[in-house]
Length: 290
Image (tube, rainbow, N blue to C red):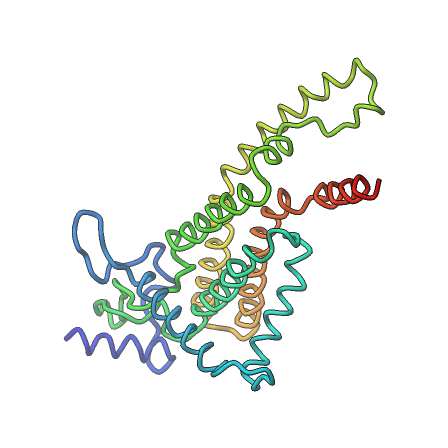
């Protein structure tokens, strides 16, 4: 019966029965509900939705009713927010920070807990399958970490890229973006006249390369996160959840969440955190004073 096999697999995942036939996890998400025509709900999607709802409910419960004198739960959340603000605000810049900070802190919390999801016993090894030579062979896992599915990390990267485009066009503008990509960065007053046009051509070529690097950011962001989480999950299952590797994956989960968040912040800050705004403010102040 399916539920008997399901129970045997759960016990095996918790180390209470013999080893599973297959080590590691499947490279692709399994369909839990198939609507046909390419539309379906996978185990990675369902896990992402459930864990996100649990996180939202937990944070709301932790904060309770916000007060001027914070409760212990509210103080914990505020401390986390202030710590991330201290790291991210200098990178993004004061102009774009209010719009980008909710996105960045959501990325960090979401990715962190979904990275850690794969460390729980039974995740990736509990589901439906069949007995083969006295071992349970998993064919359709019930629970799969969102970030161990390449589709999940691609979705995160596309959200990051879309938000980056909206924020930089709003707070930097097309003129600043074009000048930053293709403009001549040399000081014309200190550059020989014959050299300046050559440098303009060089910066134009560099700008084209930079456009290509921007275009592949969703791919690099998604592959970096997926590779680390999926590889770490297979490492744990292949080594029997040895404590050393388990502790290492806890650290990798934090690092990868921070790397994804910091890279998104850096991409925004490269265009929005310029000193030109301060310089323009000083010039305006000088003209007013004059």
